[in-house]
Image 1 (cartoon, rainbow, N blue to C red):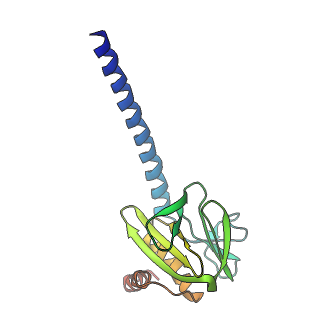
Image 2 (image 1 turned 45 degrees about the horizontal axis):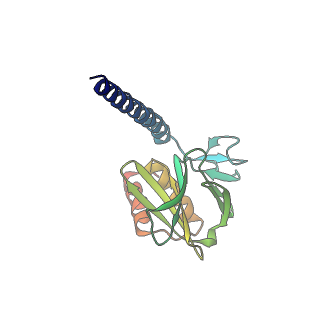
Image 3 (image 1 turned 90 degrees about the horizontal axis):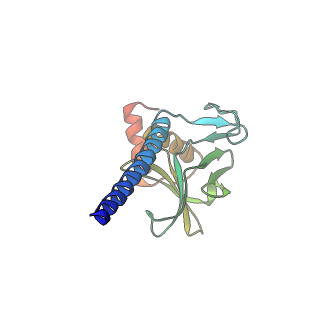
Length: 177
């Protein structure tokens, strides 16, 4: 009888602790997604130092991300690294700066194409680089924000995938631009 009580108590404490951890993660994720859902593209002079409305005369456009992923070109949905602490996608005049773990700069002509992928809870801008095996995916959690960023990539001369072009056409028909 005494052993049964200990086993039941141990299981109850384990289940309660697990439920509390998942509840906390759910709340954190939901709050972050809600913030991203209302965000707009911001221009920054020094990579996030001053948050301003999109302006053509500033050094770059900071695409606010919920998370960033480094993946493989051959396997698009498998990531070898991710970050939701400080992801970065900064569109500057002659290059793009992105960060999953480490900040990297790529000229726009180094980008093979820009893709758009959407699934349950994610709205990703995917950068596929020429002569590299890796990709960068930034989760904006907001289709309008992703479309605005894709339009900037298009203006910079980057080739867009069919999914990315469809998103731009859909936003043009909706009158979002």
